[in-house]
Length: 218
Image (tube, rainbow, N blue to C red):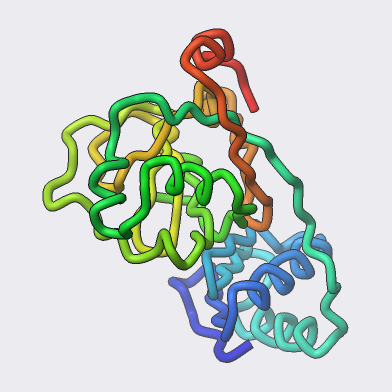
């Protein structure tokens, strides 16, 4: 851990040198299960620890976190592997990605399919998973010059070193490579199946299978 910083009056932000360090530490803190611990939110190289100020002081939380850091951190992160079906047959941004990378459309699809990703953060819209990292030959594709006014729920996009899934219909500027038929979020029911530390692999499906699976949950 490189730093502990206040994040308002009810949270501490811990910073780390690498994503895996943050994942391991967040997993360890969640296992402690002390009554004052409200939530642990990991995002790339940082972890926010939210606490109940009526049960413990800010200084006491800092001391506890430093003590836990000195203890042995588990080598395995609590992680589940999710296979998410993705249809690459829709007319999306493969030509733009191909122009930037020098790859063919099929090479782009195969590289995207052949990678196991880690959920390093969740945000932007409810349940949106930031998945890393893309193969080096797929990295560096910039966002669209202007965002689309509407990106459909389930759309799978990429930019920079990351890929991700739009869980709701909304504006967005990532390059779209495919679409999953699955429902990945239901705010009303508290349904958020993807968590930081989970792993994701995409499985290729055609349009017939896309429509058959549409609306099913992960």
